[in-house]
Image (cartoon, helix red, strand yellow):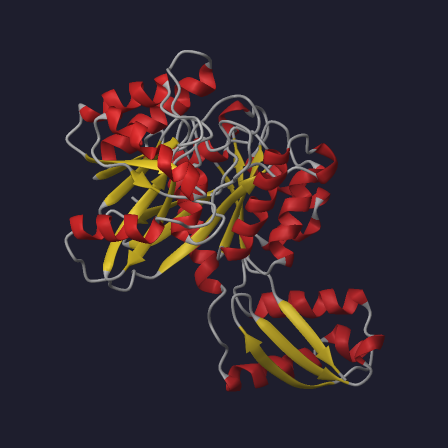
Length: 432
């Protein structure tokens, strides 16, 4: 689990009091989506923080509302309860401009029944006149209110210093080697269900309404002595299909998650087949230079089709898929759920090696004597590997601009036949 070695701080409160803004201020980046619409954060977001020699994990949560209004509200309430249960310290965030509300009182009463250390955070105290209203929050019975402004940073350092005094000093050690995996796909293809199936718990909200996940949620997971950082993301829609700003930002965050990941695990709906948006997402992962594994989810609902035939259909629609592993899974039955992680790790490992100079010389010699190259009377003069993750090569050749796309594809396929690059994009630059 994320931050399992560090004390956890859960940020809780009613909707729209600035929990995500406080999270982002402490973390130092816009990791959670922030906008004025109530209920934007739905899942638990985790971030590991170091503050003046102390290490801890901070957890952002959805807004507290009494359970029962609708399915989403009940699921958010369940997430909130789980965050409180696993936390060592709780920040109850309130809004000085709204004063104490009945939801503040109800949540404070619930929190006082726990054995956790609770801080009453009075947010939006952007100036002295607002800060003067913080005394009202003593009535919540949580001790001295901590007056802050997540917007301009007022009071944040004082708050973290106070928390630091509570936390036993921990040595910050380097984290074990890990692979970051962005779980991406169209809305409602089962990304969050997959993640929950991996963990066997409802870590991420799963609901049949498309677009339930909006933030990119990072979670650490150890499997076969390997460390994975699994990043659940919002569904990526074509820009013409985006209806709400949160959907837009969720889609943007999903693409940012791909850029900071090592591997993209692209989920498609086995029942729906490969759609245009699926193809865009696959191409985006490849163009960003990330290793790629394709997971065909909901295979338990797909009847009468052999896996080999289905894979052939995928390749027929998008030829580049032939270079990447296709795993057939069911998040419901847990079929091949962990096998996906094996494929992810294997693809990641293939993206890292540098080929020895002697092997590059042999590869160049074989390429120059290949029938397709000799037929076109082309001679490549040198071959250099200039990077990994993804593997990047430079081929020296006269009149590089005259090389046809078909010959370039031949060269890439030649490289793939010579080395195991399954699941890995290759970049080849041609220098005159």
